[in-house]
Amino acid sequence: MLRLFFKECKYIFKSLIYFIFIGVLVLFYISQVGDLVGNSIKISQDKSLKRENNNELIKPEPGQDFYGTIREEIPEQIMQIATRNLFLNYKDNKYDAWNPFYKSISLNDKDQDKIKSFLNEITGLSIDEIADKIGKPPIPIAIEYDYFKSLMVEVDGLIGGNSFYEYNNLSDLGVRQMTYEERLLQYEELVYKDKIANAYARYSADYIGIVLAIFPVFVATSFILRDKRAHMEEIIYYRNISSLTITFIRYIALTIMMFIPVLLLSIFPTFQFINFSSISNIEIDVFAYIKVYSLWLLPTLMISCAIGVFFTELTKSPIAIIIQFIWWFIDINYGVSIIEGGYGKRLAIRHNMVGNLNIYKENFKILAVNRLFYISLALVIVLLSSYVLELKRRGVLNVNIKIRDIFKFNKVKSKA
Image 1 (cartoon, helix red, strand yellow):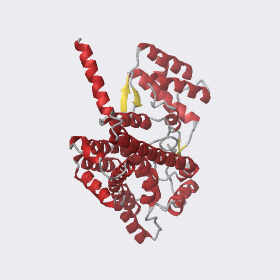
Image 2 (tube, helix red, strand yellow):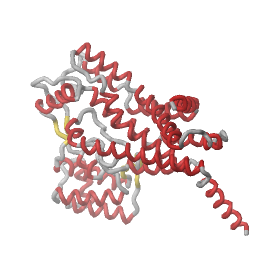
Image 3 (cartoon, rainbow, N blue to C red):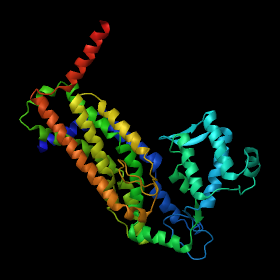
Image 4 (cartoon, rainbow, N blue to C red):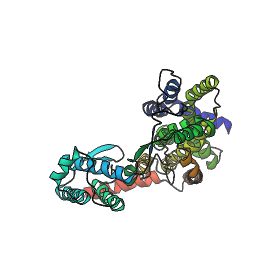
């Protein structure tokens, strides 16, 4: 069995798609995370900087003028910013949305008229009167906050969702300055409870998860299709090894080979933190990245890989890529704040902030259930894949031939 496992790993290592996967993973990591750890450490040790610098690793001191900012749902502030932004959007007929990437939306005349009526209702002013007030804040607000939020839901619907006016995006507009006590608590949580590295590991896992939710399916699909391309199916079907063993060895080989480069990404920041610990005498969790990546990222990789194995084994076609892409697309558009802990049913766990330990703790049970569910689902799918392989070895099932026959039938019918 071990010999077969290493043989499969060797096949994966020799494939071009595997190195493309590694390249995408590394490039995405560099572009989105970069040397965040090194830069944070460098800033925290720069004696020329004022203590007002809002770096996470700098311990705050009493009497500073500024301790950073914190998001808070402040109705007056939110209504002012959102109303001003809505007027400017209406004036140019350009509305920001992310589906999943940024794009500018233009509305038709009917929807523009609805936006105009919302602005009139919010401010009690005409469009021309609002224009005169834009440069002279504050803008008059004639309605209560709860009703304002309901109007913004309608605005978001007109734009198509995931806009600037979606509730979670809207509530994040409220910002106030932190107090010394709040900033000190934030620092102590990072240093003493999170052991620093855990917070940075969660942040990087947020981005890596986006890649692992889609790209492993390409590697798995290519690997399973390799048998068809190399005319190895007949050999595989007559091996003196059970279908269950073959399938699970292949799946484990795929999963491990794709998780290795993920773990390698953690080596450099871990050594940076070890070096920082020796200089600052602050205790660091050296296993933080391994723990976070295993809990947050491995289940995502497992399910993406399992989808590739099952549907490719079933159809001997790349249809798994389409299925996984649809799931990935829906998942990254899932309407949960990625700052406040986007756990729930998500395939790719989101936590787009260094720190936020309270959110993590409050939602840990949800996170654990989520990850256990996807691990279990992945294993069930792989079990089904082994059953499909067994049926094919017996000559009972041949879905790819049936699909080909359907296309042939349609072709003959069209000619007739």
